Length: 226
Image (cartoon, rainbow, N blue to C red):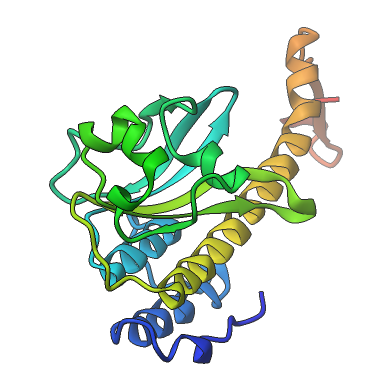
C-alpha cells in the first residue's frame, strides 16, 4: 500500500499528523510485524485515531447486508449500550443512503443545519449533533459499507480537511478489508477439497506395513489417506 500524503492536512486539527504517523507506521508494516496486541485490531485503531482526532464520541465501520447496516467494528468507549459490533440498523433509518446519493454531505458539523437530518428520527433519538461519514470501497469500486464518526453535539470547528483525514483512514480500512477478503477466499479454496472428501464419506485409510527384511518381521504401519 502506498503511504497517503498527510501534508495536505496542515489546516486540520493539530492532533492529526501525530495520529496518522503512529497508525501509518503500523499499517504499512507487514501483517506479521504489526505492533498490536492479541486482542487489538488494526481497523479498530483506525477508528480510534479518527474519532480521537475529531473529538467525537462514536466511530464505526459498517457493512451493507441487504437492507441493513451491520456494524462490524465499533469504537465508542462507555457507549456500548448504544452501539457495539454485531448490531444492525435498517438502511432506511440511517444517513448512509442519503450520503451516497448526495442528499446529505459527508461532513455535517451541525445536523440542525440539514433539514433532511433533522427530519430523521435517529437524529434526535441517538442524538446526533455532528456526523462525518465516507463510503468504504473495495477494489473495482465495490461498495462495502461506511466509515463513520459522530457525536451528540454540534462541532462547527470540523472542516473539509478533517473530512480529508477521515477519507485517508477509510482508504486504509478498505485496503485491510480487501486483504482479509482475499485471505478468506484463498483459505476457502484450500478447505474445499477436504470438505468434499468428508462429504463423500472420506477419508479412507490405507494401511501399509513396513517390513524389516533383515529381521524377517513386520515393523510399524504407515497410514495413508488417498
